[in-house]
Each structure stands twice: as structure tokens, then as C-alpha cells.
Length: 457
Image 1 (spheres, rainbow, N blue to C red):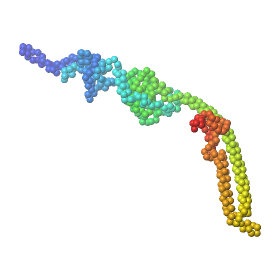
Image 2 (image 1 turned 45 degrees about the horizontal axis):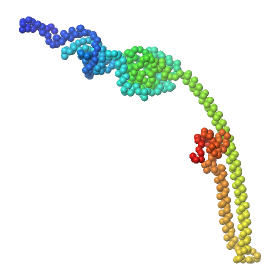
Image 3 (image 1 turned 90 degrees about the vertical axis):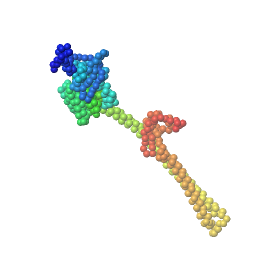
Image 4 (image 1 turned 180 degrees about the vertical axis):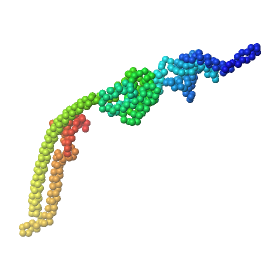
């Protein structure tokens, strides 16, 4: 808009500008003079309203300038802006006409002294670590012999070829499920996270390998995105991270249950070598067979020793049983003889009493004392019964003293398992020596744990 002329008191005509006109002239001049510039300063008065734009002041020791980062540019900033952060910005100088203030409209912004991606990496790592996503207690062990392996990577990269080659060479009977994704560029992180979730939903894979080949920090950034890290941490299936080369480190490595330096190393970590496993099984089978054979020979020798010992004990028991039967017969014969002698003595005493009885009635030279005879017979019957009970008690005592009867009351006969020698004293055996206990029914093979003296019983 052209300036209006105005007659001054001195009579001369001079142009007069409005504030808006002056501000517009200044804006055009500044934007023409500074269309693209780099500026270094410290962020202060940082504001982030709901519009998505970022407002702040850039300052140094003595000056300051207002700055604005519009939403479209703010979305490209991967790290979090903070008060006091030293930054280097690129933008254009302009004037905000409503307030007449000049400001810089920022297009790109980087932290001073450290790359933007590296700073974003450190900030996200610190935040997720505080949530416990990298804790060792969350790590799941890898299966020893997986049947199915899921692979989340690019279907055209060198990583998938290396992984499949190693898996086929080491474990040919393995099933492999490949989830093809983009591993670089816009949207790659979301694809990787969705593939991990899909494999978990299917529940077929025993372990998952996620990764790609090497590259720059920018190339590997998909594996530093928060959505990928959270998907790995939330996986119910163990995850092996194989991103880049050995020197490359991503946040996916911290969240994974196992970190492999390369895709090939990841394949080696999830499956053993089938030939080695078969050889180990063959070796174990042979060793188990030899150990079983040695054990059988040892047990056979021990059984033979036990049999000899039991045979000796059986012979002793039979001998004692025969001796018991012989003593029982002798006791019975002795009892019969004593009963017969006592009965004869009683009859003789009856005759003597009959001849000496003063009230005896004599008739035809015969003594008739029926009442006294009946009384004597009853007394003799009682006496004989008493004697018979005494004999039976003696026989019962003999039976109780029989070795078989003693075994029947819970006692046992101990013999050494090695040679069948009867154990009569605790000092006859050693700790660890095996003994055989003969019971009333069956036998037990025991091992001596300790030997006690009489005072410790």
C-alpha cells in the first residue's frame, strides 16, 4: 500500500505510514535479507500447546530471540525438547506482525554437541529403563530344541539369507515362519511390532528372531522406535535381537531376551547342531548301557552273597527248629514218665491208707471204703490237672524260646551281605557296609549309616 501524503505545518508534504505498513515493510526486508540462516542458542520459555506447535525463546549471555517450530516440523524432531538445552537451528527470520516482534521460524533443530538421533536414543532408553522394560528378571530362556522359529525381517535383505542358511545347516528338521516387513523408513517400526504381535497370536513359533543387516544409526532407527521395543518386551515367545553388526546397539537389543551380534549368530543361538546332538545321544546311550551292565553285575554279585548268607541262616534256623522239636519230644516223654510214676505212687498210698483206716469195714478180707476212694480220686484228678498245666506252660516257654517264634515277635537275624556272617555285635560291621535282615516273613537289605555304642542306645 503506498504511503499517504500529509501537509506538515511548514507547508511541505511528507509520506506518513501506518504501524501495519511499517511492520509489513520491515517483515519483507528481514525475510529478504535472512531467508535461510543457522542459529545457536539456549532454549527457554518453552511452550507446547495442544495445536502441536512449539514456542520458545533462544538466548545467549546477552540477547534473545523468539522462535517457533510449527507442527509439521515438530513432528520430525525425534528427541524431547527441554528447558536449558543448547541447540543449533536452521530457519528463516520473519516478523510476527500482531506484536511487531521479529522471530525465527525453525525448520530443523539439533542438539549441540550430540546428534539428534543419539539424543533421542538416550532419552528413550532412560525412560523405558525406568519402566523396567530392560530388567534381567523379564528375560525368558531360549528353548533348547525348538520345533518352529519365527523370523521378522526384510524378505529381500542379506539377513534372511544368512539366517535361513545357518538354520538349515545346523537343524534341518526345523520349521521356519518368515514374517516379511520393512526394516527401514517410514512405518517400518509399526510393521515390525505388528509382525511380533501376529506371531504371538498364532502361538506356533517357539522362538522369534527379529533383525536386519548393518547400517547407519538412521538406517537402524526402526529398531529404536518405542513401538518396537514395547512389542518385544510384551512378547510371550522368547525374542532374539539380531540388528546390524557386532558394534551396532539398538533399544531392541536391551528389550530382547537374547542379543546376537549378527543375524547369523542369532540363528546359531536358537538351534544346536543336529549332528552334534545325535552324537551326544549316541554317546550317552552307550555310557548308560555300560553303567547299567556294571550295576547289574554288582547287584548280581550282591544277590549271590545274600543268597549264601540266607542259606546259612536258613540252615541255622532249621537246625534250631529240629533241636526244639527234639527237646519238646523229650519233655513230653519226661512228663509222661513223671505222671505215670506219680499215678503209681498215688495208688500205693491209697492202698496204705485203706489198710490203716481205723473205721475200715472188714468183710471177707476186703477193705470197703468207697467214700474215701472217691475223695482220693478227685484229689488226684485235680493234682494231675495242675501238673498237666505246668507241663503245658513249660512247653509254651520252649516254643517262645524257638528262633522262629522270636522272629515272629518282631526280632530279626542280621547277617553280612558279603559273606552271610551272623552279626552279633555292633562292632562287627562298618559304616556303609550292607547287611541282610531276616524277618519272620521275607528279608531286608540295609546299609549301615552309623555304629552306636551301648551307652548311646
